[in-house]
Image (cartoon, rainbow, N blue to C red):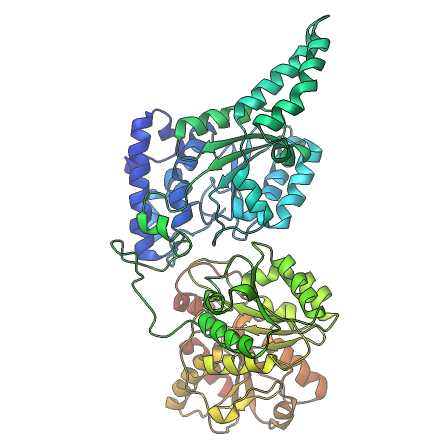
Length: 625
């Protein structure tokens, strides 16, 4: 049946029995493809019937649907003409794992970070009204996203304006990890029938009946508070109503007929409304139902067992970080770890096993995490905030204003720095250096090995100012010279013999610089590879000692603009030292999705391309890359 679905309109004539069979086929395809390619499985298994119901009632692409976070759009992609390419999901040159405007007219807005869909939907709805057009705008928002404050800014604005739009609250009691906090508890207990909304509208119409209407309305309205307190729990219903939204639900998110009925009621409503839909994350695949957090974003796995295919021989950098942090916590009762709904992804589950009372999960609220960490530090604690590098962008102001201006000892641990791979442009950690290097008093570090990461963490335990440590999800292991450990800021180390061609490499690019060193050696060019793990402060003693005739190159897995190389170039130029010939990094473009090595080649950061460019520069030839 799935092969015959070329657009959502192919769903219109199907019976509910046929739709149930189709839902089963979709789940089989989800499991098969994600088990081979990796991706977000549990959330998509849970949203199958909800997506089918939305496309049956609404008419996309004329109507607009925005998914928050966007990782749960796989089913949407399958039934909007992309099933024949679905096997290419998240692969280089294939379809993206998130909505993509350039991929389909059905993807009206690109999402990848949480809590943005309601704001975007309100903007699209206002654009519709300004242009006197007629179409529906629907934001599909997971309950986990409601731990992000941006949702409430949007809800407040939408409710105040009365703009017609629909928010579908996909309530599965999960974001990535199980949701935490008072708001999660509120949503779990929120219960009200759609019939209440219908009855309330009918009561309002009593006002229009001559003579008897108003007295009867006043009588019923006077008892409404009592009735609602008994049957509906007024304080809960009042949350959305206080923001100006009508509320419908909760609806069984695996009951197609029930959801279609609720969506049609919402179509008729003239203002903003919220529909709460209860779904089960991982629905239909027992391994994902049992461990939805593990199957949120998963690498390729064996369907029969659920075990990952490429189980790493070594622990991830995140787990190394967490184990080291736990060791520090044993010695210092002030150490506390903070995560924004990413305990498993950042490796802090290892820390939580040893110190469950000293890990704080704030939900999807990176801004709050940063300022709360500042408060902890001001109160005498030693907070460590573990966050993906791409999500760190969301707390820029809090990092700058609340942490760094007060010179508080908060350490930000930026996992997944550099080119992230299959999740694509919203998840590449390529902008963190450009937002941290300019900040006065902020130490910025990039270890080249797990040993160096451990040494850096131990150093932070005794420092009294803010620090950022960026590291990738995985990187080729290099042999480190343990003689230069323990780590010291502002000190770089040459890993090869001295020569007049110098490669200043930061973080993950150190191992690649060693590959380049070997390739150039085969061409008769000797190079010095320097581990520049202290991005800021740089090693000014080393830079000042570089010979005038040396050819210096910088390498970083980051944007060239505002990055390590540009910073070093400015420092050298200002002080009259030898200026780098060229900076290697990501150019002025967004990197798409695919496996890491393909994307590194696209960025011109593979060893062959960089070695060729350096060889030409050394020979005085112009390089066009």
